[in-house]
Image 1 (tube, rainbow, N blue to C red):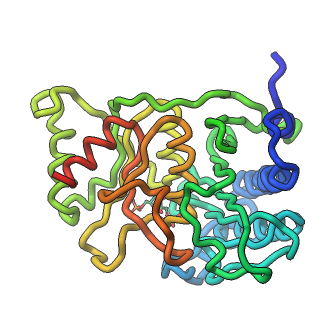
Image 2: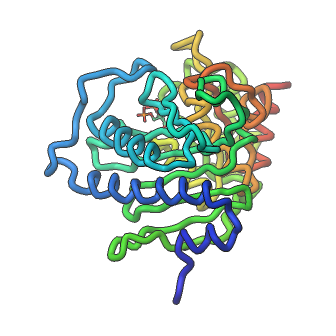
Length: 324
Ligand code: AFP
């Protein structure tokens, strides 16, 4: 069976050549990252880097390696005006004639690296229409403005999942020829859910509506929902959302009282917006308790946000518990 390769998909979809060059550049560098990940301990690249990122989190060696690889790859693409990374303190200006800005989380779920479990690279492409010299302000656009978003999941297969605003498509890396080939042309999230995803160990720290909502899911057939729900938590948003794109369900990382001044754990511009764009493009919903995430006007590039996303009916119900 002949499958459509990523470059052919982008050309057939009439994607602007500049945007194509960015997506193809990210795809290429992800293949190199996947090879580094595959070497693991043999290459001496596991473990801590001995530094903290701007978010105050311990960096893994592979966080730093993947960040540098993506930064170098993007900086070599003339269409990239500037970039911002979860692992960088400030935005990085690139080419003065570039028409796009790129934000990325080089290795989401990095606590999984040392246990040989799933991690991924998440990216978001925004149009640039601001100042000649790129500033943080230019990046502060609502998620709805994204020109493209996607992720690469480094799992048993390496998969690139992409939206250019025309639905969501999945590609699988053919490792023999280093080519991403389309393996799902039309990703769709069912409106109803049978599965939910939350770190239950934080339960006592959530606000009452989230406690009530999850308690009702846990009560299953014996509770008000009248049906049983399954639960999964990979501790890598990229993998948890991938499962939702493949077989449905709800994912949430709510605000909790451990860090009352922090809106949530997940980053708006590196995680919630790109993953949210994919979920909406696949027919799902993406909310905080107060409104749609893709409509949020960011205040700074490292902003955090509580996230409720996935099956449309289930997200609506979870939000309803908060708004009652
Ligand atoms: P890191 O990439 O910094 O390890 O964080 C991953 C993440 O932000 C997100 O991908 C997971 O859903 C979440 O953290 C897992 O957090 P817990 O360890 O609190 O469950």
